[in-house]
Amino acid sequence: MSNNLEYLEKQVEQLKKDGVYRTLPINEGPCDNRVSLDGKEVVNLSSNNYLGLATDKKVMEAAKQAINDYGAGTGSVRTIVGNQLLLEQLEELLAEFKREEAVTVFQSGLNCNIGAIQAIVNKGDLIVSDELNHASIIDGVRLSRADKAIYKHSDMDDLERILKEKRDDYSNVLIITDGVFSMDGDLAKLPKMVELAKKYNCLTYVDDAHGSGVLGENGRGTVDHFNLHGQVDFIIGTLSKAIGVIGGYVASKKVVKEWLLHRGRPILFSTALPPAAIGATLKSVELLMKSTKYTDNLWENAKYFKAKLDKLGFDIGKSETPITPVMVGKDALTMEFSKKLLAEGVFVSGIVFPTVPKNKGRLRCMISAAHTKKDLDFAVEKIEKVGRELNII
Image 1 (cartoon, rainbow, N blue to C red):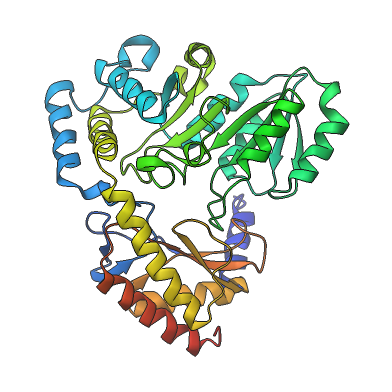
Image 2: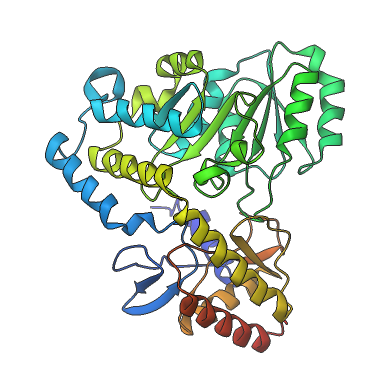
């Protein structure tokens, strides 16, 4: 019998030759400032748990209580019996938090993008998307029947060029951008984008996965940061990063929610979030609404860490958020940097092609409110040591 998977074996071997093959690390405990990977405690610089809420005792207790009250699973999609009262309460609280008319919760941020984009545009429409938008946006665009155009990263002149050329040829035009770009940590130019959308009668869509819980008042996100409430048509948030649990949501006008509940395919064809996740998320959002201490601690740690790396001479890009890239360049060197740091007790993922362009590799350091100064000092010490060994600085 012929080996029909030989093509995959060759491709995996090529990954190994290129120095970018990886095996998955196994975290033997909770996701915190320090984690146990394969029996060794290391400082964790690779988590999206921005505010430390994934291990907050109040959040964990809320998850347990939700299981006691509602069971382990919902047993159905939302349109049958999976739409539990707890989920309705979460959508109401998130709408209040985001200061928008309505919120529709999905099972993940990825599900939001692959579910919402195909539901809100159709054949005869155009999507205009930033060239560095997240992979889930790219997949959502591909699943839609709309045409697409790509504008240069955060280049509002290029965006306007496309709108001038194409707007009159389409029924609806949807401009899509990340709020915070996850690989570089820079912010979208939302005020100008909204201005252009009004000028050319376009819809606006912002994926704020890395802005939710990080930017704005009490972590309300990038739209709040720029004071654009009511001026962005579709605001995507995640519940798996700063909120510390799992899930995603679309904040919008009420009519959008009505439509998504009828045409958002992940809602129609995938079981609703489990009660534990919903209960934990409710508590996380409540904590954020009551206090700024979580976001204050996050930003204090981020500024501290960035200043130390910058002083050492590392290229940390143009991040405007706690995301701190350490630019390396060659993909194999990036992965070697990451592996040597892990041996020294610091876990920070190497980001290489296809997540970023070839030879634009970097370590992406994710700072958390849960980190102590001792954690950060230790990490900087090891990054400096290995960076000098590899002639990166």
